[in-house]
Each structure stands twice: as C-alpha cells, then as structure tokens.
Length: 311
Image 1: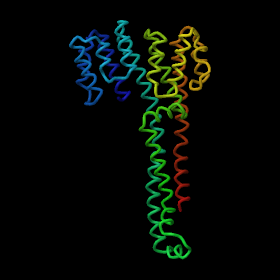
Image 2: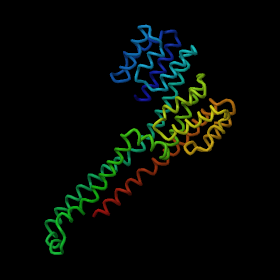
Image 3: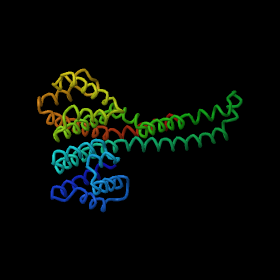
Image 4: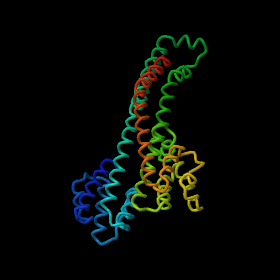
C-alpha cells in the first residue's frame, strides 16, 4: 500500500460520505478509478461485503487493511462521524508519506555508491588479476606465493563490498531487522516517534479510550522495541498511574522530550500527542536534510578511498 494513494483515496471517500453518498456506493465509484492491485482488490471485497448487509466492523476485519485503519473505520461508524475520521486518516497517511519518502530518498546515494563501488572493484580486480598473471606472477611463484592466494588477495575488496551489500539487503527486506533498525537510526527514529504520536493523537481525538489506543499501538509495534515499552504504559495505566509522566517514565525508547511534551497537555492527551508528532516530524525533516547534504560528498569520498586502497 502506498501512503499517498491511500491518503488521496480517503480524502475522496470522506467528501463523498459527507455529501450523503452511502459508503458502499462511494467505495464502488472510487475503486472503478483505481489501478489494479492489492489495495483495490481489498476495497472491492469490502464494498461487496457492505452491499450484502455485513456490518462495517465485520467487513473491515476480514480485509487485509492496516490495523489502525480498520480500528478507525469502526470508531467512525460507532460515533456516526465517519467523514471526520476519514479526513484525519487521510492527513495521517499523507504525513507518513512525506516523511518516509524523504527518508527513502536519503538511502539513494549510499546504495548507488555501493553498487558502483562493487562493479568498479570487480573490474579492477579482474584487470589486476590479468596483469599479475601476465607480468609478475612468475616472481610471485619464485617467492613462494600460491596462485590462488594471490588471486584471493586481489578479490578481497569486492567480496567485502558484496558482503556489505548483502547485509544492507537483509536490513531492508527482513521485517524484524528493518523494524529494529527503524528505532535506532537517526532520522528514522524521529520519524517513528512522530508516527506513533500521530496515530495515538488520531485515535484519542476520535474517542478511543486511552487503554484501547495503547493496546492497538502495542499491536502495531509488536515487532519493535517500542511495542514492549507501550505495553509497560498499559500496565502502569491499569495499576492506577493516570498521569502520562508517571506512566511513561523509566523507558529508553521514548526520549524525555517526547514524554515532557505529552505531559504538558495535562488532561488533553490528544493535543499533547499531536504536538509531539509535529516536533518529531520537524526533527526528522531536519536530520534528513543534514544527512542528504552530507551523503553525496561522503559517498564520493568513500568510493575514492575504496579505489585507492584496492590499487
């Protein structure tokens, strides 16, 4: 699912429902204009279930849609304010799209340099290997070096770069590794904090009780270090710690600034989480800009050092 496409879809859906169009009719009209894909397929199945008279909660639960989205659809239907909830969802997914698009762009330079370094290193190793075999290999043999030892030394750098590429592929493709790194790398960590704060603000503004909102957030972040910390928040809330500063103290994932910002809202937790989301989204943008400015020269320097060291 692409966040920008999903955001635009929800903006249109909110406008149509606000104008009095039934939800299943609005879904049918919007799906007709969408490109083929998993999102359209799931929404068409949702529309078909609603047309049969299936309650929205049951119809949404059977679909492969984001957990937060399914929960908020139910909240909107129960509060009889579905257009407002859909509008807030559209804003939430639009913010996610903006942040994560910038962060993905940040990874472009290092990946390009890594691929270029690997190809160039392989070319240099091939050329140097032919040169050694044709010109100086007899001297190596007389000095007691084995042919395979010499060739292995020449191909050491390409192998190391290849291993680095494999590690990066694992970090990007394996969900558990990706989720763990998302909460530890600069810029990505700030973006994750902004995402959690935005989702909690969205749920609380829509009338979801704090305990239920924390439970859903724990489920959404169950594969990350943040999930365990949110679970401790729930336990302290159930034990009678009503103040957010007491509930969230002592953790290592959510920084003191995050806790202080939310706590300053006192009883208005939705406003506190919204403020925290704005702060950490701005910090993610700032860190991304700084890393983008430094990524290109650092990548070029790293490539030059690899070439010189190999030669």
